[in-house]
Image 1 (tube, one colour):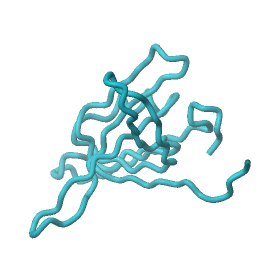
Image 2 (tube, helix red, strand yellow; image 1 turned 180 degrees about the vertical axis):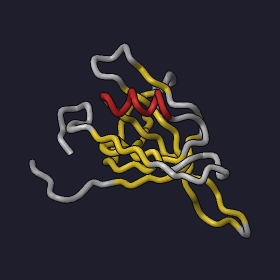
Image 3 (tube, one colour; image 1 turned 45 degrees about the horizontal axis):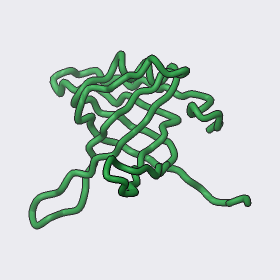
Length: 130
């Protein structure tokens, strides 16, 4: 069965924790947790956390140059995985598989010069070109 459509996700926000790089896999894998704006609740805005997985050289660069609080812009695709927890209950986990990552500006507002670093892999780690 062939499904036609578009699966594109754009995420921009700040990292909630330092990037976690798994170099033991065949291809380096880096997991990010990105804080993005959520719904307004009264006068306060909630935070929506987006899980992002990055592969290859881009994953290595994320682990090397990003840290908690870094601002990132990510383009990728949404993927949902189904699994069973320890109690045998079916659970679902949704994340963004990154194809393009931009390190946005400086985290220090006193710095005058803003820099952007673009990283993009030809494949997303699953053999699927972007």
